[in-house]
Image (tube, rainbow, N blue to C red; front, side, top):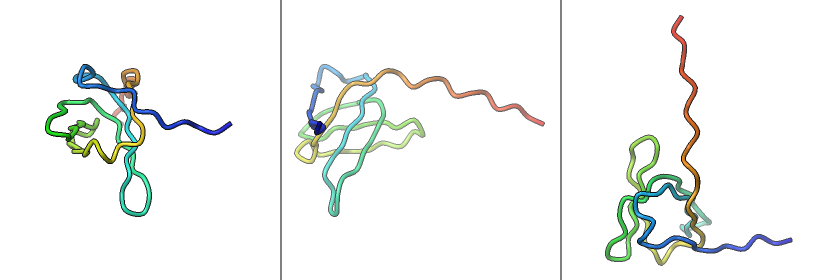
Length: 78
């Protein structure tokens, strides 16, 4: 069974956590984070580490809303 690449997000999903796959020279690149904006054909996705990824919508090959990230376990100090 082959996987289907589908874009299932819209501007209505701003504020939601999403996963994306886009074309880049030499292959594909993924980004997971909160969709902060989608203006002028560019998506802005804020990753968990705080970095902002700008993705031209014409490079998207797949995208969808995903559940919130599970909480990170607390680190115990020694």
